Every structure is written in C-alpha cells, then in structure tokens.
Image (cartoon, rainbow, N blue to C red; front, side, top):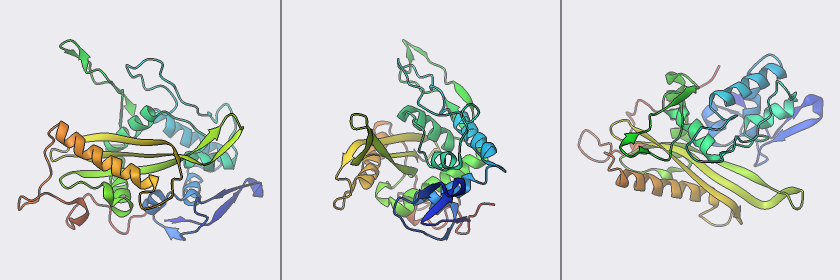
Length: 288
C-alpha cells in the first residue's frame, strides 16, 4: 500500500511535490495511485528504489534505459529524436528530481519511444524495434528484439493494472469482444517565446493495448496536442482520448478482421461484467 497526501516535502524542506488536484486519498493500493495519477504516492514509491537518492535515481534511470526511453528506437523513419533525459551518473539528482521523474516530469520522450515502452509492458517484457515498412518487395523485414525490460510475470501484472485504469475510470473506451487496458497522460506545454509554462494549454494522451480472441495484442496511442479549454463539458479532453481510443480499437478490429472474444454461450464477451475473469487483479492487491 502507498500513503497519498496533499503534498510531500523533500530535500530538507526546500522542495515540495503536490498532487494535481491538491487533495489526498490516504492509504491506497498501487493500482489507484496509477489510475488516479497520484504524484505524492508515486514519489513515495520512487523513494523505495534504494537506500539513498543516488541509488534510487540510478534504478529509475536504468528502467528508462531498459524500456528504450533514453535512446532512439531504431525505426526505419529518418531523423528520429532520442528524446531528452538526464543521466544521474553524470548529473546529480536531488530528491525533487527523483520525485518529478517518477511521474514523468523532467524528461522528454517521443510518442514512438513511449509506444514501444508500453508495448514491452504488455507483450511479456520484450522491447521491439518499430517498423513502418513491412519489407522490401516480397522480402519482409525481420522482427528485431532490442532487449528485455521486465519479466513475463511482471508484464502480466502490468496488463492487469492497465485494465483496471480503463475499467474503473475510462469505461467509455471498452469495446465488447476485445480486452483493453491503458493509461492516460497529461503534459504541460512550455512557451519558449514567453519563457514560461503555458496557461490552460496541455497535451493529453492515452497509450494502451487491445487483445483479441487469439491472445494477440495491439498497441494504440492517442495524443491530443495543445488542448485548450480542456475541462469544459462532458467531453473534457482527457475523456476524449478514451473516446478516440475506443474508435481506434473498433477500427483496428475491423481492418484486420480480428476475432472477438465470446462467452461459453456464444455471446460477445463484455470485459467489465465478467466476474470469473482470472486476469483481473484481486481486490486486495498490494505491494511490499
């Protein structure tokens, strides 16, 4: 379990991390820290990665490296960016750097890097080189594994966590016949001309996967750039990413003619209503 709070004081009181909604949820399981994007609970989790800040920073950066977030993906598209990340081995991290990095601040990655990383989260832990072209003529390009990020068991746990996020908070993205999971994201936009963070302008995203009846999984990434007036009305932009994700699941399933999951009675399986689903996380899920 993790202790969430309105804020957490770091670096001997010189730095503070606050939750985006300026609220505390108290003691919560890891799945809710993920689903509700709790900055404070995630920061406290990062503090468990080692006995001191240097060890914790090295462990977090190592995980970025294993997931391919510190170098280009090697795709067949030209002029690929490597993103921006600060190696704690060459530039010391303070506690505030570690805390911010734990929930994605202070690092810049490309959409393709993040898509590949999520792919490894759900495919059993293998980071694969992405390709746009299937091959040259009748000769297909080989599928190239770039490394192993996590174990198959950890990958299965992550699929359960990502399922929980969608089922409990963005069920509008559910599509009968397919298993889906994912995580939304929000990023501030820096206004280079003004030299400050932009007001009421944010990037919104949802990175997730769909799984068909054969167990094959497909990554889907949705990004809304420079969203403005984003919190107005029923279709606030974080939820629009879920709507776009749902439409993409339907489109991919139709385009590739993917077989849908069915119940024993032959009806379409509904992810949110299957009480016998063994891949769902147990209610008492905790972390050490």
